[in-house]
Amino acid sequence: MLNQYFVMKIKKIILGLLGTLLVLGIAGYATSKISPWPTALLLRYAFDYGADKKSEALEKHVPDHITVIQDQCYDSTDTEALLDVYYPENQIITASIIWVHGGGWLSGNKKQVANYGKILASKGFSVVSIDYALAPSVVYPGPVRQLNTALDYLIQNQQRLHICTAKMILAGDSAGAQIAAQTAALLTSPEYAKLLGIVPKTPVCRIAGLVLYCGPYDIGKTDVETGFKGLARPILWSYSGTKDFLTDAYFKTASVNQYLTKHFPPAFISAGNGDDLLFQSQVLARHLADLSVPVDTLFFPNAYTPKLPHEYQFDLDHKAGTTALQRSVQFIMKLP
Image (cartoon, rainbow, N blue to C red; front, side, top):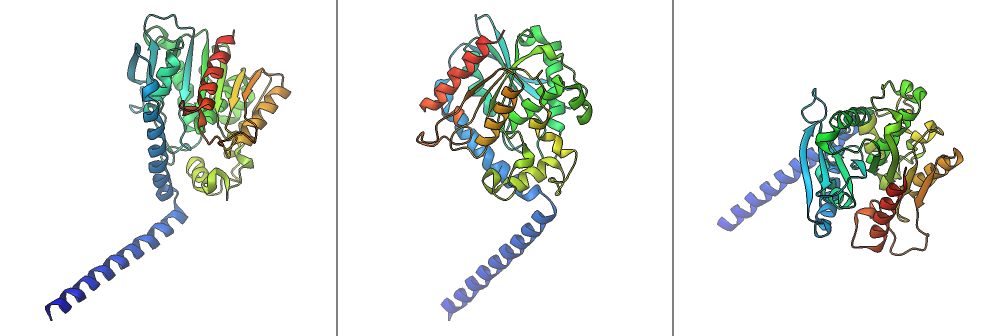
């Protein structure tokens, strides 16, 4: 009799838990249909986990004698607008790389680029890793505005932060590559800057070149059902600030391919042969070449195995990753 009581009790507890989970599931599904937040938070957790693991794997490649300047606030009106600087001890700094992290505009942080930044710094560069506000809290073109402000801050504090203003390189991965490319476009096209409603704070001549990995440069051509491995819809909804991002006139300006000019800085562009965004990098390279903008690319044959995934360049245990690092450094060194 006692055993039967406990069995009934356990059944009630299980049924109660199942009912609660069902209610929560229904509520979560309903919420995801009226707000990007539930999915955005799940994606942020997943993307950050992957980025943290990639950063940890780079630890063994980080050289000694790299100085770090942390948590510099580049916007006096925003205490969370922070950047870090890495530079080599006892070396002449020949260029400054301003790196914008990826994460689908809704995840990521400057610390995830720290180890890669230190490795780049050992080549004779100062490297700046920038934090920017994440979607859906801040929507398009918030990160572009922040990068515009950060560039001005770096110029104003060039000596203290070891910035080589004669040779500044905008760089980024994934969403960060799109932000970097869009910023370069508005700096080199007054018409585009006016269309965006952003006043450039950095002289065009300050940007010597770009290093762009695995970015989305023509968002309007993204398949919202299958793009970004089926995650395009919640990502673009989060970043655009509207569920109708496909028809939103202002968000269409995020497709930087449409606003390139012959004044765009020289660019190094790469993506892996297994990256869903490979085609967008290839199209950007062709557009720039058609405009007679100097372009250096690193693309791999379709038959290259194993297939190189999104963000392949951060894997320095793989030959393709070390090749990408070498080619990036060579590109920067050759810039005037």
